[in-house]
Length: 185
Image 1 (cartoon, rainbow, N blue to C red):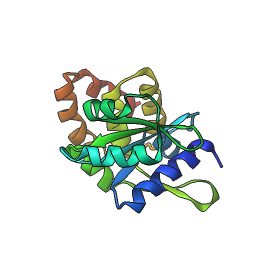
Image 2 (tube, rainbow, N blue to C red):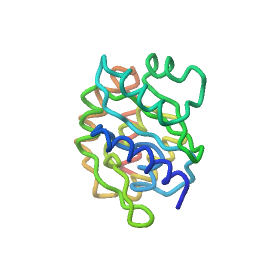
Image 3 (cartoon, rainbow, N blue to C red):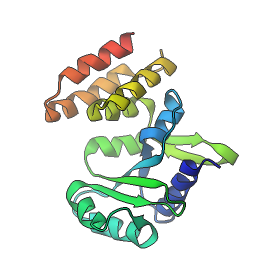
Image 4 (cartoon, helix red, strand yellow):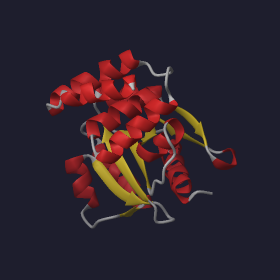
């Protein structure tokens, strides 16, 4: 099995055993909705809410190796836990709490991968929102790939509704127009 998928399945199994709510985002979701590309890690949003993050972080650190000595402190300050699976694949666990992240998890669904296994991933619309907010060069390449593969199937109104408030907070309204141009192309 693909080592990134194996690492993601390990993390997903851990979360499911505890009844935690989560969704894979990033490169794994791109494999589902966009143009497949090499991805070397797995990104997951884990709903922790505000104030109880330590319970999640500590449980994860008991079963997964931290990638840095200060992984716990970094996670509690920056809301991203940097760990690795037993096969040494990097796992980035975002500690989700805002209403958008809750909706991302609610709209998530199963993505059938190798060997009859499946991973819970965000929907294509939420992936576009997340990638637009991140705004790196690779994110825009992924956005173009998702837009090309999902032509005519995207809920553009949902994308705009979720994206605009996030870009307003980031003070990057120009990214919304850039996304509109990609979706029209």
